[in-house]
Image 1 (tube, one colour):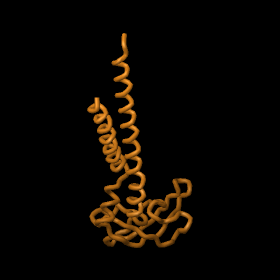
Image 2 (cartoon, one colour):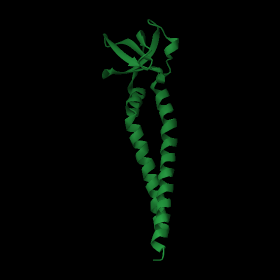
Image 3 (cartoon, one colour):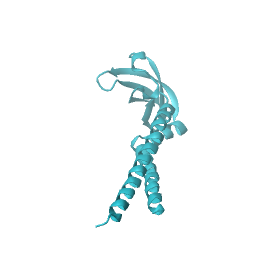
Image 4 (tube, one colour):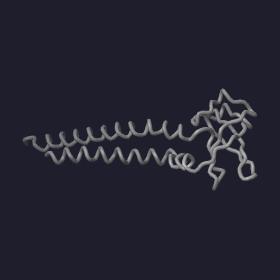
Amino acid sequence: MKMKYFLAVFTGIVFAGVTYIVLYLASNQNRYESLVAEGIQTVGVVVAKQPDNHQSIIFKFRADELDYIGTGGANGGVSFDDVRVGSPVPVVYDPSYPLNSFLGDPKIVIYSDNRFFVPASIILGLIVAVLSAGLVFILSKIRKRPE
């Protein structure tokens, strides 16, 4: 009987791990981590603001003698309300593929996402563990019921 409860808890732990991996992959965390590790910081310029498109900020920057255009939001620490068209903004880009760029500081997104992913994964894992243990308990009571 104890083994069944152990399996229920183990299922919750595995579910927590799988949840974390899915959230990690769905969030582009590897892209942000790559930009933090290998990205080049530069200064771009705001070329447009789109208040009706999730408050997007369109920016341009120069890399390898070419101009690139990117779109960003407030998740990198650049506030939509604080910039104007023509304002300088921090940009990080991948030197091997400058189209992969980020407005602001990608470290902020990594920190922010991890503050959500870890607790969410643990909470969902605990819920699955409790539900699994409850199911094992209920099934054991149903099987022991006299006919």
